[in-house]
Image (tube, rainbow, N blue to C red; front, side, top):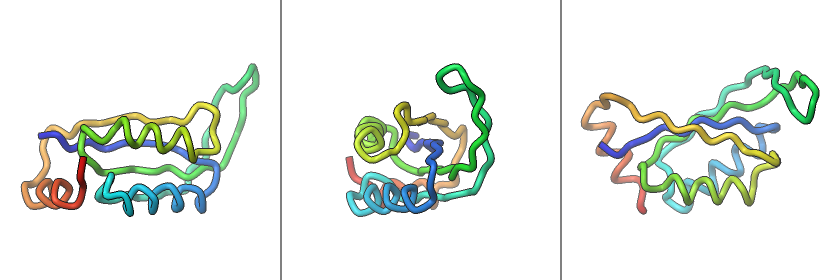
Length: 104
């Protein structure tokens, strides 16, 4: 199975939507989901508390590099977060949908 989830965060919801729509239009991803989150993290010697948008992307494993390059170009973060999770199991109809809706 070569489906993955990619987790990321962005400063603004409208930017997350813009990135998600761009990846959808390119058929690089099958779907994305957005959630408002509050994050605390170290950045340049300080602890920051920020409101962010958490993004879950559903795609093929082989599309990770394309997505990484897209985020580097379009994200507002100096160091964009892109973390993959490979599911142990996915129901076959959903897996087939992800594979049919994306291209490499």
